[in-house]
Length: 114
Length: 114
Image (spheres, rainbow over the protein chains, first blue to last red):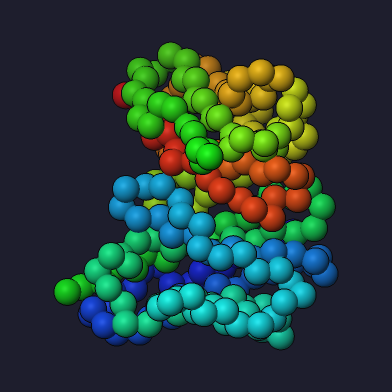
């Protein structure tokens, strides 16, 4: 069975601080995909990144970076120099091989205070 | 190229009424996934459809819920005789292939049962 755990329910930081959102996953598949989504207060789901299990290279996109470590089954997300507009709920998701749907974590609510 | 379109964005129904939620996938996408997000929860998979076929409905409640994706027109999620516990945000995602490596979601329909 696939499972995603986001242990941090809520995080509050002051603007310009760095913040890391944790994601731990479980799967028996050797091929799988990991995703991060942002859900701002307006409610839509914004796709941030997809990573497949064969690519452990870390990725940086502007102030966002992702650390994928298969050894610890983790796919953590770091926001550098956080801004108020980063306030949102962030979801980590996992998709196994075959016609399997996305499995989501419960999300981490990030509040960035000015 | 429009994204995944869901309508209505907000839907209010009285207990016992029927709710119909529509999802128009991205152009060229023939695979649709429906998810439900209960308040303060992550997204839970409901059903996966391909044109005119239900592929996986393992997440659908056994009663009152049904889904279709006809040859022409949007995918429809139908909830009969709604109850207060059906109040949630319902999201659909579409994909050009069965592998869901590109998972783009619509803006969701927020159903409120009064």
